[in-house]
Image (cartoon, rainbow, N blue to C red; front, side, top):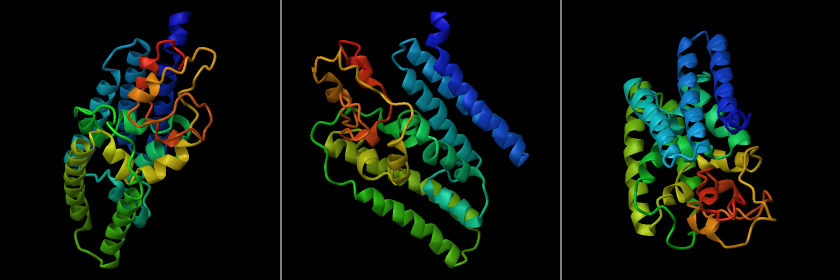
Length: 275
């Protein structure tokens, strides 16, 4: 009974993604959505299963399974722009497809349930950045968060300009925008990681997707919480957190609360199992 309870979250995650898969398959009459969300659901639930079993590289496994699938298969092979520009593109065409569905599930409504879990387990940009040597920030957070709004606006203006200019072969442009955009993101992320000695600097200051993620994550159902009776205020959870979240504060207004990527490094480091 204990074992079943231990892995229940994994089964719940699989059920949620399978429900989305079936609903989209039947609604869109496209079996691709059944395979797509079933694959992602299996990958995520496998990660949760491995985490429950305290497998050290569980999160990394999910990052690679989902991140490479999104980047290589959907992006490069199927030529779908899964970046924010793809979201604007399909939104402007008035079609509920590809990037719009992805954003709705993972980055707009999904965070109401699992917060910024996307950033910790599925983002193909972070998949590379998390392999760099600066797992935890070497210094205090910089006041550069405004840059994300610039990149967010720039992506919107770029796609809007293509439609206003009635650009020809716009689908081909969007594919190459995906390729170029990823190259720029990786370059910027790696440079910032070494400059600030912080693997997640790109996520904190530049990533435009956080404009969607942060406000929705405030209401996240799944959150890391602190058992105050067990906590001895040793500060280890704050030291290992890549996003500098104050996990000892259970309020939704805690420091950098909407930045939590559910990496669970704080949980692993707590000597009293208070998280």
